[in-house]
Amino acid sequence: MTGRFDHLPNRRAIIDRRAVADTIAALDETDPVALGRQATILLKAALDAGRVEVAKRLAEHPSRGLEVSSAQAYLIDQLLRLLFDFTTTRLHPAPAPTPDDRLTLIAVGGYGRGEMAPHSDVDIGFLTPGKQTARVERIIESMLYTLWDLGLKLGQSSRSLDEMIRQAKADITVRTALLEARYVTGDMDLYEEASRRFKVEVQADTARAFIADKLVERDLRHRKMGDTRYVVEPNVKEGKGACVISTRCSGSASTSTTSSARHSSSMSGCSPRRNIASSTAPTISSRRCAATSTASPVAPRTG
Image (cartoon, rainbow, N blue to C red; front, top):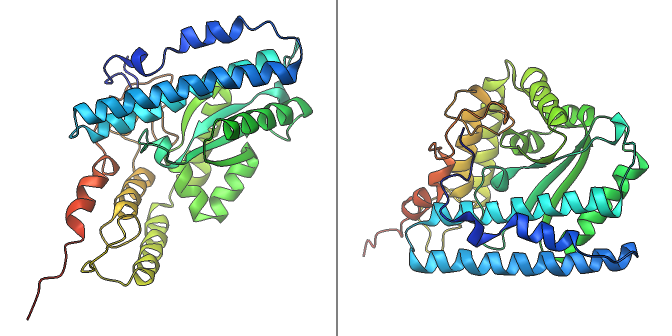
């Protein structure tokens, strides 16, 4: 079976999750606050070393931008898994967790696609089966504070499954983000239930309306940016033909298909347990920077 990042060469040079986990496990501090600080220092060192390796790869192979963006997402994935395991087992352990204590961490947006530029926002979501228990609240709070201490810029949400469905139906921005949501760590059964409900209760028979709404949203964005490609200083994210447009095309494709060409772990694609899609399957959004480079030419001189 293949995984999203299996195509990355020498992944342990980016981050060796097992080695970092062993180092964290060896911490013998009994005070939770001090223990958390020591773990943060170790995670920060792993993050910095991983970024150096990613930058080195880009410098050696400047044309491998997609590989580098995947490497950055892989680095963040491993850090989140390390932090989740540490927080749930060392900071807030539960000898007998209840079903309501289940928690899943998902990646959304560009991070959900497995495409991250250096220092780009880390967009994540916490999912719970229902109302958060006191332990889950503590876990989420501890993780967020640690991620901020690591210097990461977060886009984050915490929702029950019912809240996720309700907000995805009511807000096209939420729905768009969840289209590319994928499992990172936590309770797999909860993730698969979220994925199933999203397809059945949000996606089913709504593709035409969703695409129409996205076209309206696109037109509004274009008007805000001047409604032309021919500008001296194009906005490569929001302007005509720019990054947002191509990723929105990917979102439109996602809402109308669940073919095996979709990434295996995305919420709108196949189950990560079945994991039948290739991690290197091309998508519209994977070529967004190439589209951007030719979409906004400088206007030809007429005089």
